[in-house]
Image (cartoon, rainbow, N blue to C red; front, side):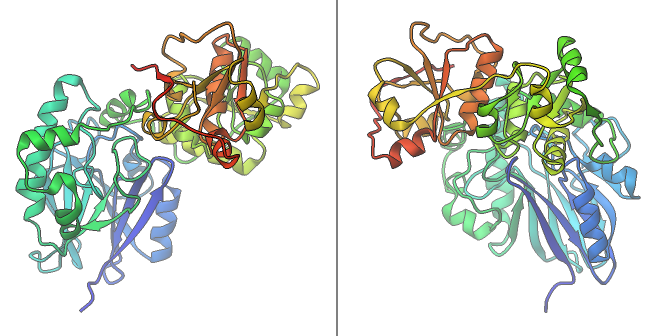
Length: 467
């Protein structure tokens, strides 16, 4: 017999996260888990499916986005549910292992699952009888092929949290039946994890067989595995937990942006407002406002803006279309960049009629290969990508660090900035120019085009400037 409930999944590939709507056509009630801050899509889906949201639940205090729980509660009568250990300061129902949310067609039971964060909880969906577990909404406690990292709070908590994660997985989650479906929040693309799979959902049985962290092992072996291979993560993460704990401002939707003239933009830039150009990197290269950030809206913007733009900055958008502007604003508010002053009406063409524009020189793979001795190649990809192969003689410097770290680059040669295809290198170039480094050239098409041209990559030579 089929259960009388459905699960609707909402994936944000930029963040690498999923939110879930669980509802029943019979009872007309639904629950939302781990929503992002722009909640219109969830409300629309609930309306289309004919369910009323009774609860909005968070598995933990998120480090990578602002929860949409208060936005949902402000627009519906849904009750906010959060871990009793989270210490949130706004109206909510504190959840413990004694908590049960009964919607008739199904029940939601709470499991305390610390590790990724101290207050982490998971939600176990059971059939209407309240006894048969069917699905686990695991947040970051268990993901496809791994678990979410434990090093996002403080160095002092990294090992204790890894120990808690070991017991969460081995003493609790693996006690569930193999057939229980697992719906994680974090997945491929999230810096909260070092994912081993691009799949978004799994089962307890699959993880028991294939997840390295779920294999029989000592706690020491588990901790070593859990803390190996973790990438650097965006700088904005350090602000999200506090905002989610205290409650970010309720926006009531994606902000409607004010059109600004070139003169107004110029004046505001003189006062410290930053311009964020979200056009394609080729368009940015052809002409951009001096001092602007060049972060393509699908770079993804949500990661790179949060990595290189100072949190709390006032921002003016420069986009190619209204849709692109809205997409950019949507991504920015998800991570707390709420102070969007407006957008440049008429785009770069309007600016160019009154003020100067700058361009970015590019170099083809063929010319770069011929001039390797005359330039310094700066590879801004992730360390794992660099280790898989890089251009001979290149220097590695992860793009997210370009805005904040000391830049000990050679000054006697032009710098050729290279990533995989062009998005990240243009972000890095725009930041370098803001930092006063202008002898920069973009490697056209990145290392992908270099390889397509048949040119060699190496793993031994070159050097990585480490943290």
